[in-house]
Image 1: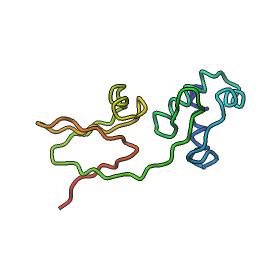
Image 2: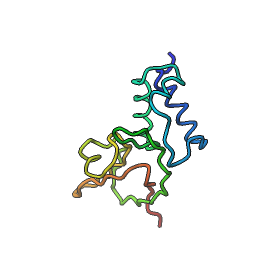
Image 3: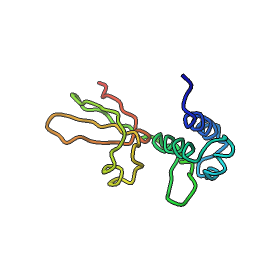
Length: 131
């Protein structure tokens, strides 16, 4: 089965971001211009942009074109013994509380007797302690 049209658009925009055809800090063309370039509807472009926002490659603000995010230097989290890690998208309340995009990939670290900790996956690398 062929991928959905929005996936084709997202793949090409992702390729242009990675190759720096759209460098960090730059704005994408308007939804209208992208739709014309890919011969698709604006809803298709919105779905593609939403996927790239979830991946942390773009940021959006109402009434503005999407902007390419600068890559972050990652911090390291050393996992304590007995920790369980779950990778999942950020919930709307988490996103609102931390200023993240809803659906941003996060790591949730749980240990018995402690509240879970949530880290944005784009900014953190997980590792285990070594002796």
